Image (tube, rainbow, N blue to C red; front, top):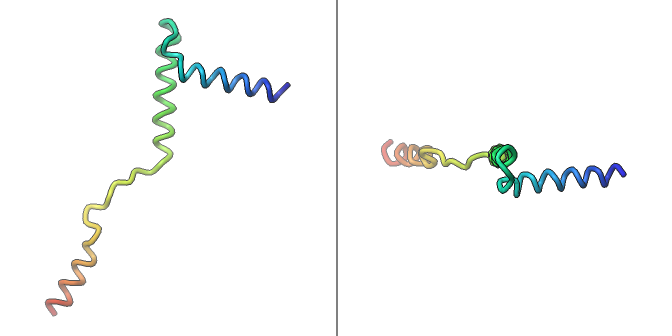
Length: 69
């Protein structure tokens, strides 16, 4: 009983978030907002892969020091 209730609630929630934008006015925008919030939350779980500005800076300095003693 408990597992089937959880499954039913989960399925209802997924359907509401996934296809709720076709619902009438009071529920459609709420579904869209929930979907947007969930998307931002999931994207926020993963770190951004922004590259460092100068990843080879240390190597370049070492080369300059060895070439110009």
